[in-house]
Length: 400
Image (cartoon, rainbow, N blue to C red; front, side, top):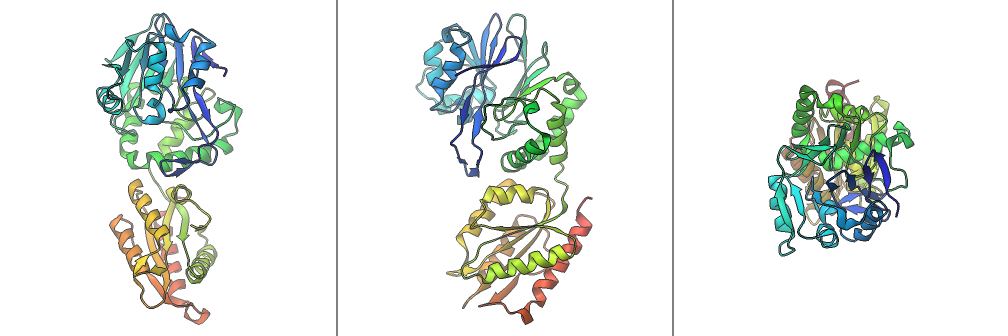
């Protein structure tokens, strides 16, 4: 396995996971990378490691540059297991006595995860000399774990940003300038929507603090722990994050639904047709064909989330409950919500969906729309009225 040179004495030595398709409940159809970096200064330093099972790939890349036992220290920017799972095995290979540096909460998390492994865990200071280079440490708590931090080499303008500015994409290419922006922007949005959405307030504050400190102007390369390394124009991904944290909705609606005998599906089709005729960009997403994380990505920039469920055993459909639980955890802001569904002898499904959307803080322009048995053309007035209400509210809320 070959390393990739990023800058003078700095190398990518991570691992590529072509096969992963589920990342703690988030669909990863393109796989992922676990990025780790080697700095070959006087103090040879490994920044982050890889997921358990990829130790040999990491060590193979390192061995092409230096004998792994020559590494004097490891810096862990984030303790989540996709970056630290291999840490005990790596430390046994390079020397258990060598220090692993992390934030104070990083030390606590790593100690909890790897009890009895004999790791020499040390809390970082504000900076660390490596010889010709130095590392400056910036705590970024709750972006997206309490232990998260950035590491910065001021001499190179190189930022190790752990889970910030990343994406899930497995390939042999390592750099942003090997892809068109039209390709990477959807991947970046997908990553942000499903990983970082609950932390937009903290991210916004961090971006503002970085701008005020002047650090942003010094950054020439951004090395995240997943996906591409930003070397051509790192400002592009920072700019995108600046847009995404605002959660400003577009003139767009997402219809997410499941169906038993096609009645709720028919209602979804009617809603999509009428919203489209009213000039609203509309995404029609059956949960039989779309993953919850795909709905979340489409919903991130949408003004309205319209959820359809049949009733089963006096409850909403299980796949809809799963979707709402997932969306609730993401804490999406500035959303209009609506519910619809069909039923047989009882009709709790759509009512329960409406209640969940209300509990999530979504604005509800109308009551849920329910049809017993099979909706008929002559009875579609309430559904069309709901589409008009939603379109009107979207017009007030959305940005052009």
